[in-house]
Amino acid sequence: KMELNILDLNDYCLGSVLKYHDLEDHVRFAQTCKRFQEVLRDWSPVLYPDFRIKRSHDTDPEEVKWQFQLLCILRDVIKRLYLDIHQEDGEAPLSIDDLVGQIKEMESLEYIAINEGSMFGGLNLKSSTPRQQLIEKALDALEFLPNLKSVSVSSKTDIYTACCLKRMKCLERISIDNKIAVEDLIEICKSNENLRVLWLREVVGELADIVPHCANLEEISFPMFASHKSYARLADLPKLRKVIIKSTNSTSPCAKLMELFDAFADKKEQTALESMLLFSCLNFDEASKLIQLTSLKELRCSFDDARCIDLLTDLTELEGLYIMLGRSAAGSKECLNILRSCQKLKRLHINSNLSIEFTSKALEVLRKVRTPEKQKPLQLYSTGLMHLC
Image (cartoon, rainbow, N blue to C red; front, side, top):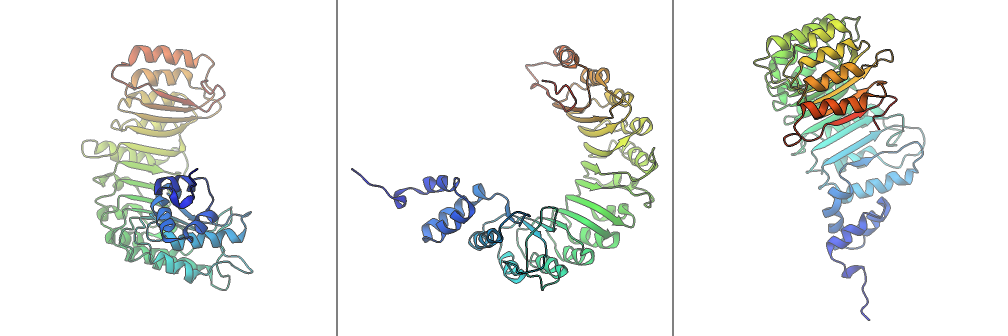
């Protein structure tokens, strides 16, 4: 009878076994021998596609220590890192200098998210070190990482965040979840010429001032503020494909939003815009301006008036549409009109209390307007009462 032990397994079998073990087991496995360590490193993209160092409210501090030990083993092969930094009183399991020392060696790192605490708690670092210093050192450690392309920062250290991002040269995606002055944002855009995606929470100054310095920007996310004069110049961004407007923070109708719609419509022959996600509720006047953007392939919008849905029938290039309706506006008839007119739709998501007959009527419409031999079935979702089941 042949006897086998774990050393007789090939690397693929060992990696497959690792999928059924926890983080602490992975560390102990890697510490056993050089071969096991290499197997763990080879399988890290499967086991840890997003490596997280985070302490939630119910996590034993020992868990953070195991996370750090695993980070030491995998640091040069990790591509995505999430740090939830939260300072608390009392004994801490990890020092910022130890953590920063590992980050500086992460040569494969492409994306990092730094979050200064959360509702779930965070990474408990030495309480004798001011929280601002924790963020600053973590940001400093990123400057010379050769493959870093994307940074997401949520912290209260506004000024230092801007200073660090200005020193970086090769970022393609930036998310800043704190206040930033437009002068700093311009410098960041200048130093990162290949910037493609920019997500912002609050800009002090005119956001549109970044336009001359963002020739390669493809996606921007921001809230509209009444204090800003205009957002219309964003339509001059030559490669902008996607606009996400988190809120308008203004009375309705929002003149600045309508002005932005007009600006994109005036440049419809030059603009690359094909996706717009709007998280504030549009009224009829705003929706009437929105439908000028006939090149849109993706749209997310919210209405209180079902008549606004009928306006969307002009957007015949749409491939993805997400509609939210207020309780008073069911919109079944109008949504059927969308199916008739927007025949390129691949996905329709409706958040509304649709009529009980909507599903059967939608199928009737689709049979008439779609060609099964040439088109895949429409993905139809509803989060209203009927759930389209």
